[in-house]
Image (cartoon, rainbow over all chains, first blue to last red; front, side, top):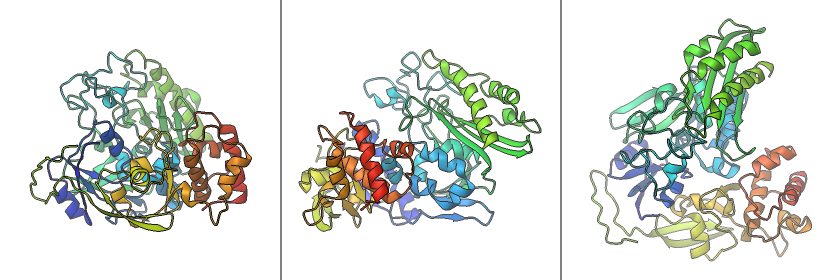
Length: 326
Length: 175
């Protein structure tokens, strides 16, 4: 690891001040950042430790939802009684990711900011527009089995690796951040970006901004939900395709459906117009397949990952069936 | 390592390199004051500065689990956290498990069930089993396999490691 200087911030304002130093980054759980620093994919010259700031509380909001402090650990969140009982989709999604050790360390804010696991992003010997803007994308013509099929650009086909974020997108979370210009709230759908011609930017969080909390609205879909994760082994592997499915049912009629895909794009992939196709419809396999087709419209494979298009469709159908029967 | 690096501060004050500092670590019930650079991982602090080499460096990337230690009773990858960030925490390594000459029950169970061959992953596996018991979330065999997936054994002693974990859960042999 390259040498860096280090300070500990005791409050949000100090953290925002200190991260303005050139080459500075926040560190909390460290599970992704330190890993990337060891292989020189990221090389901040200054780290600001934010773990002394009191941002780890999980509590109910006045609006009837819950607020996850940005520094709440992934494990503490997944096993929190409020999350387990009212937002089981989120609990299941978190527990589908990483390992017990990593979940004990990783924070909720950090989970949103983890970097892609594209092999070429990790391999400093190859061009990568995300790691080194303008150098080219090695994945498009390379080995791309794990990579994106939706929302890609000619510059980048990386995927966002988080499971937690797929559930947060389905639950319509809000990300609260503080920066030099004060506080703002970012709807989850607007938090992460598509690669476009700026693939080095994963999210719309500004360099001087810190995530303070993630807020969930009251509606938790605790009755009919599934987090389905398809991967190369049963545990500790990133998703080839994952689906967060949540339904509100009246008998077998769908009042509301939420469907978000993971492992297929640069951000959790949600298509509200396709979701709306299920509104007022019966919860049948045929209707689910129609939605699946709509969800994958415009999908493009790059050779090794062509199979993901049909896999994603079938995963949507299966996830919705599981959610119905739960 | 470049010790000539002169980094310019903008508004906040940046410390100068090399930025070593006194770090107080509490390991296996003993408090140690170490002079560490901020990039020293807990793993390197244990192995290189405290000579506690029971905790192993396998991949150094959080993938193999050989470096698993308990931090306030919870298992973590000691390779992926900085020592300077873990002051005032209770770190337990494999060296801290035996009490009064008696192996911890999970250590004994690894012997009884023949749950290792080369032994390189074993200290991490032992800490991980104890952490799993402390966490209290594993109920079934599938739970064990899932919640132990952060510890890789290249000898493939998994079948017997699972037996150890089952016994540890039945007897509730946490920390």
